[in-house]
Image (cartoon, rainbow, N blue to C red; front, side, top):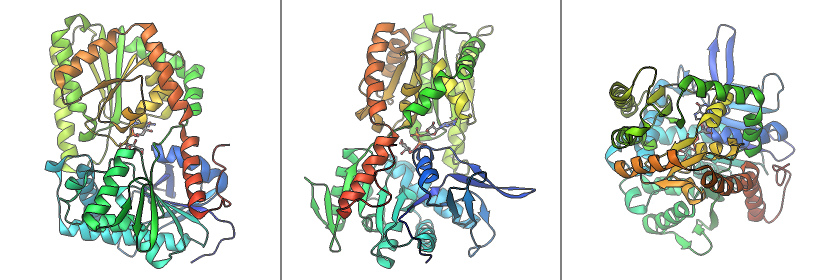
Length: 485
Ligand code: GDG
């Protein structure tokens, strides 16, 4: 174990701040896009530390050595430590257990869950591998921050081998009710793995409650439901709800840039309709893309006055394309887009503009600016950052956020128009209302939304983490209290 002098943060996540790409000049780290990266990377750039993650490439064999790079290349600030995964591990751990068992289970899609013992054992082995990479980096006093359902067993590994390490774990997706979790043959292992941490964070109190109930019901752990504490192996594990924030000011800055505004104007001209609706997300069955398209089609059937006057831009970012369910969904979504455009296109008018690609950040913000209505209608979502980003980007104080009641963000975002994405007729009616909403009502709602998203931004979120870790240890240390500057 390498000993470092000052306490540092060791971030641990399946995908990290960079993807490693092979080029003729050698391996190149390419910056990755995710809410977690936007939240935490600026802190690592400022304070240093380590990010332990899979770099997204295939390792030739199981014992391949991972790269250890000083990043950013042009101005090294922290270390990226690659956890190499073989093709077999990627298949069984990543496409298999995490995305075909835990992901659908936590999003309440029991009929999509695939439980397989070989996938589970690979998941356990890969988690041990991640823990091994952390051991190589961690020194006494460091804070180890582990992220998400891919790595639920890492905390217990760390606890057993290095009990003095301070640990924080953040679970980014919903945590299901214990009745649902109990269908997973390895649920107790998942819970025991997580309970290796000192502090366990979720986006919502409802997820905290589900976790506490699961620990009590499936493990028989002693739980203080008032204080959100689990007593386990002579330790107190604090559980808390801290909904993630975004870098509000960064989105605002991007939105007021003349080049972003000009691009937004250009997009509106190109699409050429009075009212523009937008949806942006990974192409994932949890995001409710198909249901939304059906509701859009219903709107055009039932409210023909919108034909020729309103269009939906659907940006579907490619995701988990090796998982069959995701490939099938792509076909279904594209068939629906084709059918709706076939039915309602007229001259240069197209009711749905569909893109299967990710966009650069500035282009994304230009779309946020161009959109009169933002439709975020997942069937279930841990939180949803896109909804917050839209709100932050609306610098002219107009715009309507249509938000699924099953997105975690619906708990916070008073001012959004809530929908039930399973109710196609109801959703079509709400689209109609949103498209026709007057300016005064839009401004009133957006003010409420902006106030919330601005106050509970990413700096607030990072501070929650620092304060909780400091409280837990009864003292502030080197890395605490500095993220909000
Ligand atoms: C998981 C949970 C939870 C998307 N398309 C583009 C793009 N993005 C960026 C967005 C946003 C992030 O990706 C997506 O975050 P979400 O929260 O909306 O959704 P998930 O990817 O499912 O995230 C979710 C989150 O973790 C955080 O804990 O909220 O519930 O499922 O930041 O901006 N960025 C760019 N181009 C795109 O086309 N540049």
